[in-house]
Image 1 (spheres, rainbow, N blue to C red):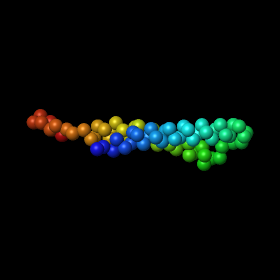
Image 2 (spheres, rainbow, N blue to C red):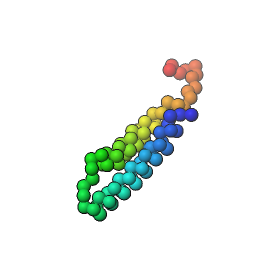
Image 3 (spheres, rainbow, N blue to C red):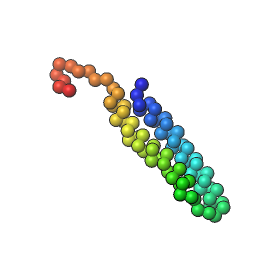
Image 4 (cartoon, rainbow, N blue to C red):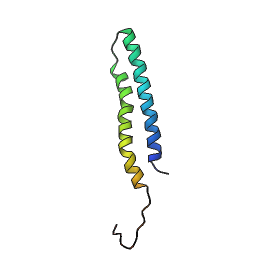
Length: 76
């Protein structure tokens, strides 16, 4: 079990939430002709930023969790 297995699905879930929430509020705002509140914008943008962090950290977690075979010629 690796931390990467938690990060990738939760990142995809957060990305889906951010896109749906942002589009929904954008349609309501465009229909009513009022601007988004700052908190609503951040609530839709924060999951996208977290997804970027999860996607950047995924390879590092995945590589670090693979077992290494230390042989006679390996110095690490």
